[in-house]
Length: 358
Figure 1 (spheres, rainbow, N blue to C red):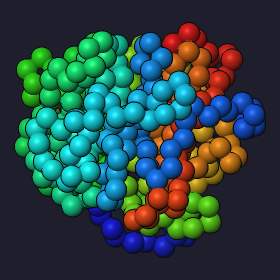
Figure 2: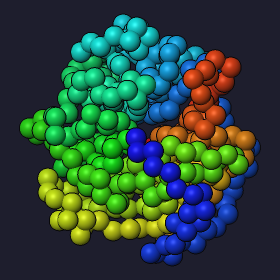
Figure 3: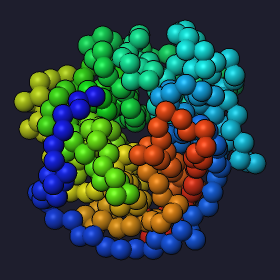
Figure 4: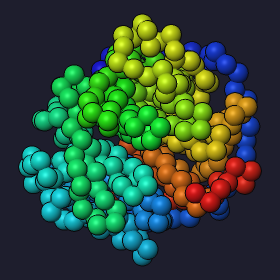
């Protein structure tokens, strides 16, 4: 990742918005939050819930001692390697195999499939072979295919971070949080390419964040992602930054930065988020510096959904049955040894006005 440093004082200057956002405090008591499961000694980042209510998480390969890459959280709160222990054994053995997870950063359940995003970049040492998506059939609990990025879709230092599946265009969109840019995978012909590579809209805006009174000095590029399938809009956001951008999915094509940049619009100024999700008009996102889960309404009101001790680097979101699920990855506190740390999956009710069955 780019480690260029700037003064913390620049943080305040990035809050100038091109569009006005009204900050409105809403219900935020942690009484509305329910623990789904917690695990000691294994840091988890991603969470997703399938259509039948199964909860899946992933553990990134950032240090020694990682016990699994992907796990299902059972009804009793246990974390069981998924789809099986063999597919998860490479992370513990530091083994590179085509049939085995190596450095998973995200899991997304979409209809009857689970998409497992493997960065193939263990411990941020560089991509050892091509980043890929393992596609798991949720009915058989078996890997049915692997989608491998082409060489021009990633860089040697890429850390492909998150994904969204777009049925209308038959494409999968991904972010690269180490080398700024977005990645497009075309399911029609199994080709992939980058857009907005090293562009200002995908690059970190600041070199440091202030989290719990401490500087977090690892600039993170394009990270948060949300897809509005009703209005065919893709939202994206650098983690180390305060600008929420959007582009119409019909405008996404393999083209130069100059051409695509004309089609990108700034939506709002927000806090610095990690993961994001879109649901019924709202963009849900974290404010890492305030340790809150927030949502941006269609009228650009920025509202607080959850705050307090139950939010500690809200990393990834999923929505199921009127509830928002999120992980606490506690990245700012997690060093080389997390054996004494506990990481949680929580869920909280959606705002009543916008809730739905799924």
